[in-house]
Amino acid sequence: MKILLSPAKTFRKEALNNVPSIQTPRFAETTEQLHNALKKLTTVQWQKQFKLSEKAARENAARMNSAQPLTAALAAFHGEAFRNFHAETLKAEDWQYCEEHLRILSAYYGLLRPLDAIVPYRLDPMDKIEGLLPLNLWKPILTRALAEEEVLILASQEYARMVEAADAVFVQFMKNGRKAPSMEAKKLRGTMARQIVDLKLKRREAVRQPPGWKLSV
Image 1 (spheres, one colour):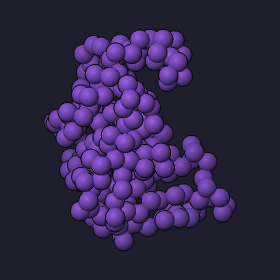
Image 2 (cartoon, one colour; image 1 turned 180 degrees about the horizontal axis):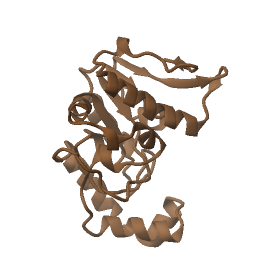
Image 3 (cartoon, one colour; image 1 turned 60 degrees about the horizontal axis):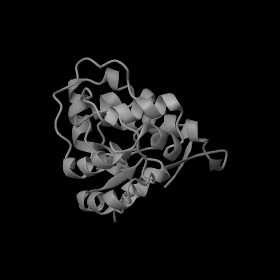
Image 4 (cartoon, one colour; image 1 turned 30 degrees about the horizontal axis):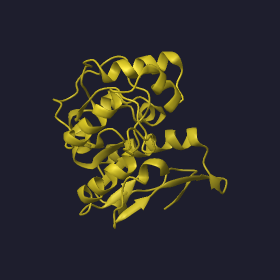
């Protein structure tokens, strides 16, 4: 089973302890193609195209044009889902399970293993740059990469579109008969992913819904 999560736009400011050795992401050539397009953007282009503040635009332009520290993907992202996943409490056996079963979808890196080395970036699947649309660029690559896998998608619909897997189940959180609010859904994705890790579940059929919530799959 492969569990798919969305990435986050926010990153941890301080490195975590006890993280195993990092490794090179699998699709570095495609990432380099995107990097070459992004590093040509001026601060003004970042601000207008990505609807960023001037400060955030300067930060992202600098990221693409200077060396950045490398961090394991699962220890780097720090959005709501990852704050509720609590990577800082993972033990060695948890990292081993995550490395085998957990994947993070990324418009910049494609499909990340937990220990893949990444730098902070800003890119969504529908952000078009120099004629490149990450969604279209990654979809055939990730579809091939997951072709033989039993897939459980805990990612948002935006990122789930990056994959076409014949044996995939998309999890949607429901509350009071309606789709859960975005922020709550993000928290629950992280919580559910961590529960699966703690239980070391290897088959999708073993996954159970959190108490008080209905999962529509």
